[in-house]
Image (cartoon, rainbow, N blue to C red):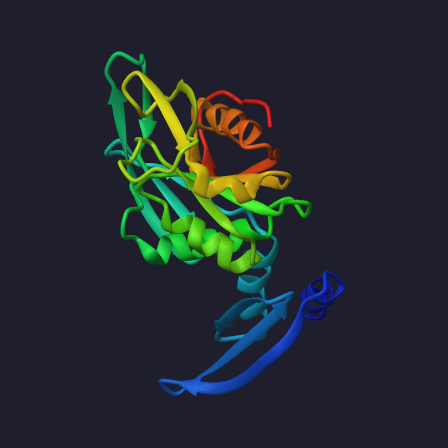
Length: 236
């Protein structure tokens, strides 16, 4: 217990709440730590159990692959949430991928966003994410880091304000070429350092397009954060 407390305190975390109580007649404990506006909590039947949960949330990976299931699925864990992802064969692409469809899954995205926030490069001044099913992730990361956010559209909207900038690249989950767009309303990005946010980075197509888009916007790309990467290792 003391080792866990020291590790957290050495990293700048402060105890905000610590309560011991009984749950269904059994001893239970709750801890809450805060740091720079962030909060992590842990609870369990012992202090060691609760602090282990907090350490995992404060220092552990954003997500973990637990197992490859017999039914051709992948079992994952993100914070306290676990999910099974189907493996889908992409016709014409020559490969199969585990599909993470987080649309509407606020519990999963909340856990992931809080964990990803601590990985955002310290020099980042803004966050950019492609339009898509996990877009709520950007809200959580933005809230946790207090950084302004912008969504790169995947189609040109009728209300887009000129000038519009765009960048294209091949994406494993999109048929043909994927194009990302920013209109004049994103002009505030100019001169800022921007980090890229996404749920999954596979071949790096969306990331490559985002880097070009950020440059065209007069900003500087400083890194990327994602829940998962899959496939061959790519550059940063």
